[in-house]
Image 1 (tube, rainbow, N blue to C red):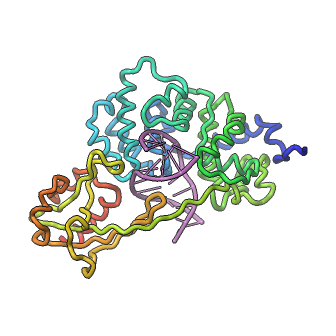
Image 2 (cartoon, chains in turn orange, red, brown; image 1 turned 180 degrees about the vertical axis):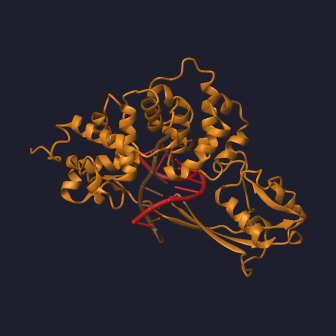
Image 3 (cartoon, rainbow, N blue to C red; image 1 turned 90 degrees about the vertical axis):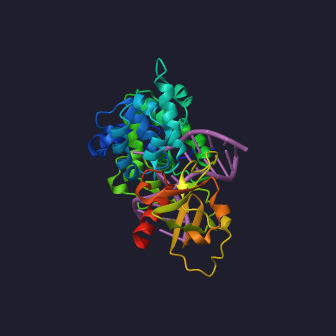
Length: 349
DNA sequence: AAGGCGGGGCT
DNA sequence: AGCCCAGCCTT
């Protein structure tokens, strides 16, 4: 049986790979706020915000967050509503609730966790985040595997098998990725891998010319870096959800999602039109919004209605609230609804 | 092992 | 119009 041939010398020269990577990182790393005067708290907050969220999106949220919740204790003692409010628009809101829970546990924890296993016992911390926190903030020699690392690793060895889910990819790549870790500087090595994936070894149009480790890369040698990794495609589902915009005596009617809702719990939205039993099919929506969420494409026509068109019985529903326009900024709206409400109020009133 | 969970950037 | 992003939790 022939030994699978990898690029020139990745497996024979892991130290060389790590050195080339870390030298590149030392010279070209981005100036990110959580890297300035780093602390354990900054690392934890940034890693939570960065779960499934791009750096550029996180930046303004991170700066605001540190100004309002400067440390674990402040966060632990802050009301949950205030915490979620600061997360407004960032998505995956259980991250915010879990981050506050983590702070509440952390301030009563002596000593703090020092291993990935210890961190992973805390709310909202999975394998990735546990490895990231303990390596970056504590120097623990644990390699992280995220989407960037999967892309880099599969390209390094030109691994073309189909991965059904990320768990499968992680299981397969973990030994290789861990074996490449620079145990002298595990935190910087991990960040360098992700930085490389974000800025050079990108999904489309990778900048192999600027890559510090292209000499170790089998996909580069083959000239087909974009063909790795091979991931299962997800099916897109389309939905339509009609909503209403109703303003009366300086207040807008909003619907609060139940506290028990799996998604967007306790957050406000423009009310769903359907429960009101209005005949809207022939009406012209004042606004038609489209948005993509995960594997869904949702089209949401918004109809302007007068209060008189809504029956008194439906208006007594406990989840409906007349929010004064001057106080709309105080409540937490679900993502795009914040922008839609603003656009509607400017357009109509 | 799947499916749900947000929203936005980028091609 | 799709894909992906410094993933985690529940079922």
